[in-house]
Length: 92
View: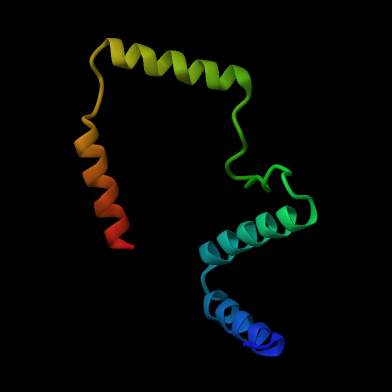
């Protein structure tokens, strides 16, 4: 595939998702990640503003909460998590 064919193919793929805002948001994030990696290899990937990283304090609070849940027996079997994940992926 030559350069012009590659560009045309890419634009066709983009055109196919333009009516779906969620797909456009995801594509925008992926493109920014790819662009960032090409411009500055090793640099942290673009962060989705809807899902910013946890602060150290937030992470520690989540870990403490999880440890309390485990101690209280509030857990889910790995098999159930894997089954649910498989079902979710299969439905996409």
